[in-house]
Amino acid sequence: MPTFPLVTIPTPTLRERSRELEITEITTPDFQQFLDTLIETMFVEDGIGIAAPQVGKNIRAIIVNLKKEGATAFINPEITKASETMIVGEEGCLSVPGKYGNVQRHKRVTLRALTRHGRKVEMEVSGLFATVFQHEIDHLDGILYIDRAFEVFDRATGKQVTL
Image (cartoon, rainbow, N blue to C red):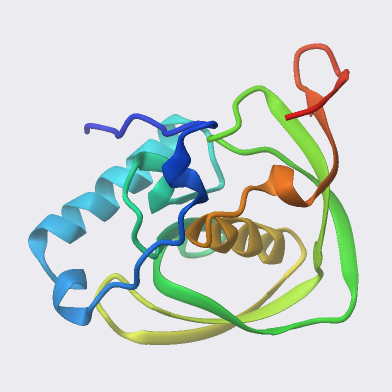
C-alpha cells in the first residue's frame, strides 16, 4: 500500500490551524482512501499516532493506534475535559525527526470526535493515550511538542538542542 511523504519542520503549514471537515467530505471514497493511506504511513514510520498536517493536509483528522481497536481515525477531535493532574513524559514526533523532549500533559482527557463513518464518539483516555491525543490534536492547531517541551534533545547524541 502507498504511503504519504512526511512534512517536517520548518515547513510553515505545520504551524497553521487545520480546518474542520464536513460530514459530506468524511464519507467520500477519496477521504476513506486518504485515511487508509494515513494509517499505513503511521505504521511504516513506526508512529503511535499521526495527524493530517504531518502529510501536508491541513484538515482536522488524526489517527491513534489504540490497544484494543487498533489504528483508529478521529475526525474534528476536541478535548472537552482535562484533569488537573499533570504528567511529564518523553515525546518525539515524525515531523521533528531525530529529536525528543520532556512535555507536561494532562493525565486524563475526555474528547469528542467523529468516526471515519461520521458517527459521533466521546471517550475518556488516560496516561499514554491521553498524551497521544493531546499531541495529535496540538498538530491540528499548529502546535508542536517542541513548543511545550521543557527541553529538547538530539536522539543520536543525547545532547540538548535549541530549535
